[in-house]
Length: 205
Image (cartoon, rainbow, N blue to C red; front, side, top):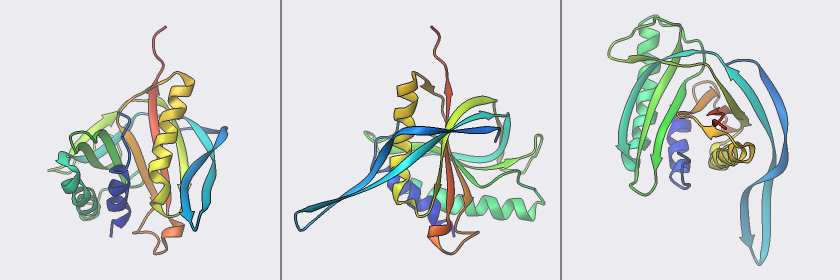
């Protein structure tokens, strides 16, 4: 049921991972090349104009299950544990305050392992053993909203990282993927809606 999450992990494996409040859209300065295809000597290029969103994220609270795992194990972890968390929250009468989320703390392509958590946003003080309740502080962030299949998710992550560097900002982990509309809400992958968020800090001068 959480094929979206499982497919996201596979996409992450293909790239090097660079270690909600009021939003204002800022036009991207250039288009992002999502893919290039060579067929019969002709090159086809797929591009998408990116609209970066500036966010002032409030303090947020999550029920989480976090693990450090190999890439091979991470694939199943995110899919199965997200579904398990959703079922447990429903049985426990927990009301989510936002969509199912993945928090990515580390993605080490050299060593082939990652540190990630499945996360469900909840009200402050919510408890649901054995899940841990964490609080992420208020922060500024940039984000990209993405609709459709997950083929371009890796390109979105790279673009966000590059945009932070262009602005002279420092990426503050974890990175956040919010599955606004996923496999549980829509059967057609073209209807999926995802928000990828990169919190940041302004380096001291």
